[in-house]
Structure formats: C-alpha cells, structure tokens
Image 1 (cartoon, rainbow, N blue to C red):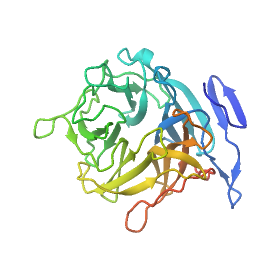
Image 2: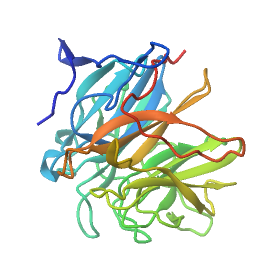
Image 3: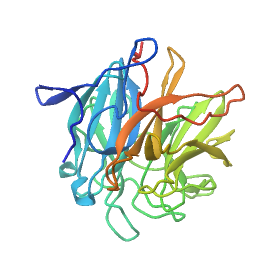
Image 4: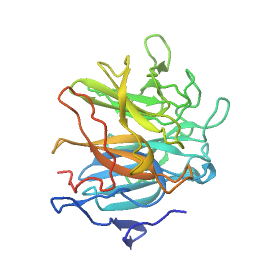
Length: 330
C-alpha cells in the first residue's frame, strides 16, 4: 500500500533508512526534496528530541486501514529513518479504526503520543487517546485504558489535538473538528483534565474560518494559533493563523500562511512547525496532494522554510519541490 518513490532504500534490522534523491541548490548544497519520505502520509507533527528531528504523521488510507502509526527521524532533514508501527490499535482496545493526527510530547523522561481514533461521533466509542513510551520510536502503550476525551463538547469533534506547554510549565490540550475548537487543562499525569474556574472542562476558542488541524507556538511573548481551513480532500485546504496575548485568546484571524500552488501541488494543509533554536530557523512540515493524484488519501509529507517579518507576522509560505537545505540540530 505504501508507494516507494526514492532512489535509495536500505533495510537495517526492520528499520527503513531512506536516502533521499540528492537535490542541489544554487550553493551546491544538498536539500531534502519534497516529499521528505515515501508513502501516503498526512497530518504531520514534528519535534526535536536530542540531536534528531522527528515527524509523526497519519498513515493516509481508508479508515479501517488506519490502525497504526509510523514515525520518521532524521539527523539533517535530508536522510530519514522510518520507524514502523510505533503505535497500534492492538494495544488500545477501545480504538479500532481511523487513527488520526498524532501529537508528540516529551515529559519526565517519557514520550506521550496523543491521537484521535474511530472518527468518533457523540454516543460512539472513541475520541482522543494517549500512548506512552520510553523513547520516541515507541512502542507506545495505552496510558489510560480509555480515551482521554470521549465526548463532543461545544460542537467540537475530539480529533486533531495539540498539546502545548506554557511558560508556567502548565500543559493545555487544544483540539477540534467540525468547525469548532476547544482548549482544556491537562493534569500532570496526562490521564485526566482539570477544570476552569467556572467549573467547566472545555473552553471554546474557535477562530473565524477554523475547520481542524489546530497548532500553537509562543514567540516573543505572543501566542500564535494556527489551523486548517477548507476541505481536506479539496484544493481549498490551507492554513491560517491568529495572534493573541494569551493561549486562551481571543483569536482574530490574520490570514493564510500555507495553501496550494498549482505549479507544485494541491491541498497544502494540516501542519506543524520545527524551531531550531541553535540557528533560529523555522520550518513548516505539512501534507499536500501531488498534481497527478485524485484519491483523497494520496497525500505526502513535505517541509519548507517559514519566516516572520519585522512586525512578527508570518509571511506566506512558498511551497517547493526542493524542500530545505541540510541542517543538523546542533
């Protein structure tokens, strides 16, 4: 089911090491190329652990085939190692299909992988679960024994979660689908949610145009909320953002930062960011659909540079086929 499109493939003890096609820029420097690894994948969450970059995507297939997650790691953004089946529904008895949009968090020498399962509707089994492992490559086991969020609150389907650590070391979970976004407090054990001062568990923070794929960063004491707009199978899929003084908003939409380019690819959306604090570089990791593909699940994971202007606004991303130059973490 996975399309292999790279020139080099080496099999090392069950772990696939992909040598990307060498793409040279004007300075004769190797670049990642796009997509950055082979196969149909989407909804990537990216992180830096130690000296490696990691990407955790959705395996893009029919719902009843989306029963596992793979991960990919790289020392330089160019050569990627595949870690197969790091999380499987066989270890989550309440989850049986449609594992979507993982979000990774490192805390207290453990790695927690949050995900949505079962395309849950109200009254059905499923929702947002949590896997835990001793290293980024898993294997991830069920941290709770049931879903962390298993209800439709404020109209938000429990999918597409993102976990955010604020400057006070408190953790919050953002999530939502069906055009509604919520924020909730995560308790320290990552097994339960806290309450807001009004006694409620979920606070709605839906910005204009929100559909799904929520993401947040803090930069220069400002909170940047990002999300996907449009339909995930359509050409209008894209990413927009807002800025606020608090992770709770209010968030007023500023504009799009990522969208299709009909000279390159269609339906660019559902992203995450990488910030290399040593170089100051920002990268956007996202999925898009090749111009030759019409199947909704035929999506690929790509990377391009992301820039902020002098006023702190995000400049629209230019999607490319070349990707980004090789860059180590340190």
